[in-house]
Length: 210
Image: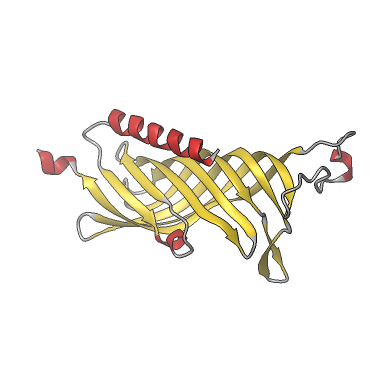
């Protein structure tokens, strides 16, 4: 599933790249915060107008296991950004939409620190969210992007015990329990979907071509 997600991401990015007007500035960025924990998050941002940009990005976690817990996932996300001052400069608000595939143990906050559930889920889902951020250009072609996003996530998955056996009765509120064993589950929740500090470089400047 993650391999198919990767193929779709490459195809969509290539299509959007070819369709982007040549008069737009292009920035390629990498999330330094994710990179510190081994998660890859490349981003491409296109200028649409004096106050707006469009960004497409992929997030990939290659971790098959963290202390015995799977943490392998991929996300493809598209985002529209509106800048208060001007494109790629200052504060912005954004709306985003994306989809994901995952095999991971859900992290939880317990006693002030993060722990993983003693089980894992494998499936796919989509997300719709909002974000805020700040961009600062420096050294003519470089940019730093600080951001945080929160989203509604809808997931479909199978739940497994740590030995790989399908968990037929996952945890649910009593009123949601199925009338018969159902290993394919769904969940809807509000969660952070992006956070980071990205460093980028302008790879196309239409002003330089004139």
